[in-house]
Amino acid sequence: MQNSKKWDFGDDQTSEKDKGIHFYNKPGYYNVTLIIDNKYSKSFPIMVSPRGIPKPKDSTAGVTKIDAQTQAMQYENVQFRALSDASQFTWRFGETGKIDAKDKLAIYAFQKPGDYTVTLYTEKIWNLLNIV
Image (tube, rainbow, N blue to C red; front, top):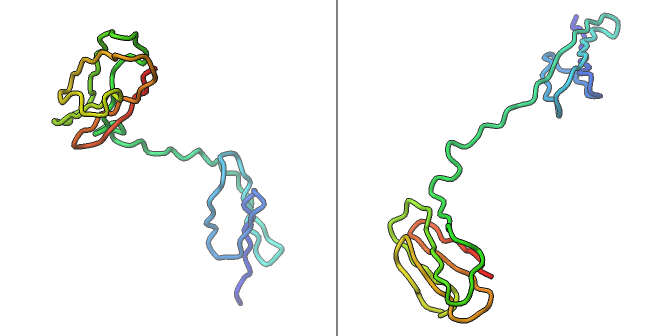
């Protein structure tokens, strides 16, 4: 004679499988009950802890960033520095439509007032900086 089993996991979820395996949607205290043949039951409290999400080893590795001020006056020399482990750099400062520099550190003075998008290309990634 085989016994019928029912698991009540305390979060409005139940199962009639032999093993009471269940995944909770949120942490907290729950009262789990095993009911056998609809007449015998055993209850026990459990605590479900939040699951830690593993952090990436280094989420900024290989990312290229531009270190520069975001506003400048007309004719003011602005220093642009690539924060990157790349070895090749191509700067377009958005004013000439051409490549303006090819070094990790570049200095540029905007000749006309306006809003410009500075673009840095490397062999790894490119990045944008808006200059107002």
